[in-house]
Image 1: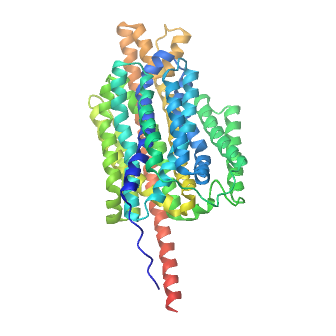
Image 2: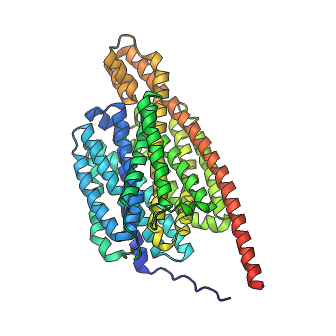
Image 3: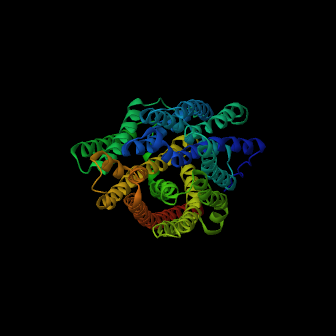
Amino acid sequence: MTNAPAPAKATRREWIGLAIIALPCLVYAMDLTVLNLALPAISAQLQPTASQLLWIVDVYGFLVAGFLITMGTLGDRIGRRRLLLVGAAAFAAASLVAAFSRTAETLIAMRALLGVAGATLAPSTLSLIRNMFHDEQERQFAIGVWIAAFSVGGAIGPLVGGVLLQWSWWGAVFLAAVPVMVLLLVLGPKLLPEYRDPDAGRLDLASMVQSLLAVLALVYGLKRIAEYGLDGRGIAVLLAGAVLGVLFVRRQRHLPYPFLDVTLFRRRAFTASIIAYSLTGLSMMGVYIFMTQYLQLVLGLTPLQAGVATIPWSVCFTVGSLLAPRLARHWGARQVMVRGLLLAALGFGITAMVVPPYGLWILIGGMLAMSIGLAPVMTVGNELIITTAPPERAGAASALSETSAELSGALGIAILGSAGMVLFRLWLGPAVPAELDAAASARSLATLGGAMGVAGELGGASGAAFGDSARTAFTDAMRAVGVFGAAAMLLAAWMAAKLMREGKDETDAAEAALDEASDA
């Protein structure tokens, strides 16, 4: 039996190309973290309702998730570099318009356009890595850099955003993305290789419509139920989304070139990675939206101080991403994922214990444990996901990875954000002063920012007491979300251990059978 030749090592061109690929990933993370810090300023100027505030944050993730599978398949067909550059141009243009929005509705529309543009970036970058780096160790390191770029963006975003919010208006936070995307547009054509599947089938429009409508219907139904309870419209839309999702999956089984290759889920390691990725995205984004408001509206930090407080999270995520390949070689992929998820569960548990006067330090401790635990999980998980698929379908596989991450993150904001605010209103309701009129009472229960504004208008002892009650109710809601996150990480760790063990047993049995056949 002849040994297969060793995979080719990457050259300087590939490593420089990796640096270029990291640019849109950095902006991608910056756009999300900057916006979270800007929420209080956006609330003050645009005065969105509670529902509009959630849509401003999560419509970006919803549309990214809705279009990712389409864009991954489109990149395989028309070229991944071409799709990346088109997305970069659209992202820059949408950022400019978003920066000068004057109403909540306009900002929501621009965030939606940013979501469509963002959906072209993520699958293109990860699938290009799959085709640029053929050596397993180099590919794991490259994916670690790719994950780290999101963390660096998360670190730069709050810091740059804090500086901008300290001395400028909230719209300036969107402008930071423009020069980065322009740089990508200049250097990308010179340094990035083009890759497309020469045998790609036609783009199935029915599948595209089904996947998009299924995601949007599921999200809208969940949001409405979270906000209004089990009303008829919310349940009907949710069921419609579930039906569309089932029809989409069934359609993929009969297409020669499907959007979603359902056969990939037969691999236990692939399924374990998707489950872990989804649960971590849901829990992490659900608690993060509370953290940023807690730092500013409960602890009273300035936007710049809040940005500095989130730097340890991003730095540890970066370090964990770069160390993941070494940990995987030492422990194995299964142990890296299980141990990382257990450490993340500890981090969420620490967050659930936030109490004054040590709230800031307890929160930072929880952030550190979460980021160190989750970074290797995401790096190793992504490597397993994209290497399971054949190279010509790397775009579709990476799109599926990103779809699970983005949809779960958006659902974390929608479901956990809405559920947390339900708890906030429940616990704050008895403390609302009786002298408030209906409008002021509704505003005080809509968001923490609204409650603090009403407390300021009341003034005196009554206003101070109501402000304290609002901060306490919000902190308790954040702690409840932390408990959910810890439980989700424990569930993900158990499932990863079980599925990856079964997958290893299947692989070992297959290899043993092949050895017996070759001996015979």
